[in-house]
Each structure stands twice: as structure tokens, then as C-alpha cells.
Image (cartoon, helix red, strand yellow):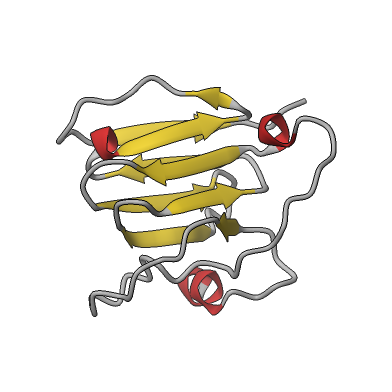
Length: 130
């Protein structure tokens, strides 16, 4: 059910905000480019620092799973992201896993994370900013 909600793009739920236009689905059914519709994140003061997670695909396309790190573990994204795709998430805590961590540029609360080795699995955790 969580995957259905992640793909449905219900506007009343917090979730990813796409900044780049996702390319067409490759037919794998993983929901790669099918995230919630883009919504503005208009914060007047330091908007980049207030966004818990930004993922940019700067290398080869890779499979990415983003889920809420709580007891329910709701999956927000599970699929292939293509080069140039950018996703923003307005909630935390989150767990992120990418099949090729070296393809991603990950920013957590405005802080760029160290680059992962190309071709190796990458994992990140976004905690609550309190």
C-alpha cells in the first residue's frame, strides 16, 4: 500500500519535490520518475538549509530508494533515476539507498555529503533537525 501511495502523488502528503522533469518510465514498474508533483518550497530565509534532503543524479542512472525512517517505513521513492533528475524531500527522518552512490550528489540540510565511490552502493540517513 505504501508503494501505491508513493506513486499516486497525493498532494496532501509530504514527499519528494521534483526539480527536474523525470524522463519516461522504462517499463520496469518501479516508479522511478513517478514521484509527487512538483510543489514550491518557498522559504524566504535560507531555503536550502531548511530542506532535509536533495538528491541530484550527476552520473549514470541509478536505482534509488528513499523511505521514512520510522516504524511504518513508508517508501517515498523506489526506482530508477536518470542523469539530471533532482528530488527534494520536505520531511525527516529519512533513509536513502542507491545502487550506485557515486552517481548522486546528496545534500542534507544544506550540507553537501561526501561523494561515494562510483559503482558502489551508497547509503545516507537524514535525521530530524532539532
